[in-house]
Structures are given as C-alpha cells and as structure tokens.
Length: 327
Image (cartoon, rainbow, N blue to C red; front, side, top):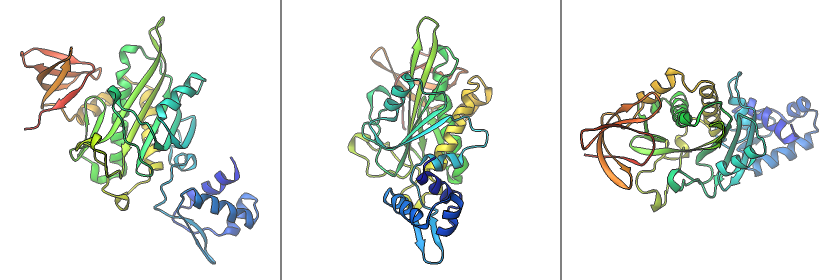
C-alpha cells in the first residue's frame, strides 16, 4: 500500500471526524510536510477533505469518490472479493474486465470506474455513465456451472442490487422491482442495467469465466433523448444521497460473491420472484422477429419468464425484449 493509500485509509476509518496532522504522521511514520502534500493530492483528486487549524483534517461524510480503500472498508469481514481495481475513466468496465480475465485475473476481481465513455447494455443499447453520479462496476467470476445455468448469474446480480439498496436506503423498501430479466426499476423508472458476458469451453460445455457488469444511476439527471423517459435515479440530486458509492459497491459485490457460491440456492430465485415487476401483468415480447402479446404468470426455477400468450399457449421465455403494457 503506497503512502496516499495509507493516508486515505486512515481518513476513511475516521470519516466525519477530525484527525490531526501529527496523529496521521505518527501513525504512518511520515513527516507533517508529507502528510500535507498527500492531503493536497487527495483534494485535487476530488476528495472532500476539510482542514482546520488546531483540528487537523477530516474526510467529510459527503465524500463520495470511488476508491479501493473506501470499498475495502465497507466489505464484510468474510468477503470473497480477491482484488479491487478503481479507474477514473474507461470505455466500459466489462471491456476492461474481459481483457484482464483473458490474462488470468482471479475469481472475485472487481473493477469500478467513475466514468464510462462507452457504457453498454444488452442488445447493443448504450448505458449513460456520467461522472460522480452513478456506480459502474464489473465482477470477474469463474463459476463451475453449465451454459444452461448462465442466466442465474444475471438473476443473482439483480437480487444483489435490490438487497444492497434496500439495506442502505429505507425509502427503497417495497418500491424496487426487477423487470425480467435484468433491469431494475424504482418508482417507475429504470435505475439499473446489467450486462453479463461469458467465455465458454465448448468441449466441456462449462463457462470458463464471466464478466458481469452493473450500472446504477444514483443521482444521475439530464438524461439524453436516447434514454427516453424511462431512465431515472435513486435520488433526485447529490444532496439526497444517504449512502456513498463505496458502501453500495461493497454491499452489491459481497451479495454477488455469496450468491455465486450456490446459484441453485432456493432463496435466490425466491427473492427474485418477490421483486418481479412483470408477474401478473400484460406484456409484449419479441420472438422470431414478431411481436406477441401475453400475460406474465411468474418466474420458473431457472429464471425463465412464464407467459400465457395471445393464443392461450403457455411458454417459458429464456431471453428477448419484453415490454410492459401500461393501461
């Protein structure tokens, strides 16, 4: 751990409280001048650090810069993450993850970015990823599962995001839903997109590695016309935030890593069903380049959407575009 990381970790451990420059220097074996220099570097990097005579330095409670130190501080004691990589900017955290996965990055490697310049969603859709307002993260997983179980990873991601937000924000409880298969809605607006991509061994039929990317709009606003009127955020602006991105990232990552241990756990699919936005609703879906109308009846044990179509035939959807018919 370099000097900047050590100072930041100490400030993180005392967030919201002043700690004198002398205390920092003594704790880390630094000179007062070195401490001051590092504080200036952290401030230049966007950290909200107050400095007061006879008090010292304080990492403000509102500080929300994504850092490995901040994420690490909020992980569970038995967290299964193995490495954290925090980037200022990247085209796509999934693209970066796929590159290092091919180079041998371990199961449980987490990549985050403050900005994505080419964030991606399913079916070639873009995911707007402006600075400071969202959480853009990708986990590298190396699960021992067959291709037929691949969708359960996306199921796990969606449940993990819901659980993490509900745990940190009381106002979201009972109001956050999953639109099959991978979009998360809060108060009628899409706040999260998930993109899971796999590298498979076609001889064994097993998945060698998975990169599973998640984009969460925390306080994003001024969406482009391309996002339409469906996109929204958890909070209206920065002043409403009740948790940091570091804390949310840690909770989401821990939940995913725990679910990855057993994707067949009955509690996972039960939690997904409980938050299903489409169950009991009328929908449309695309199949063989044709649009069908149907009634969504529920989620099967493998994460498929059970529908009764316009011909009164029951079928299970495994993929595709689904839209809610709003009356």
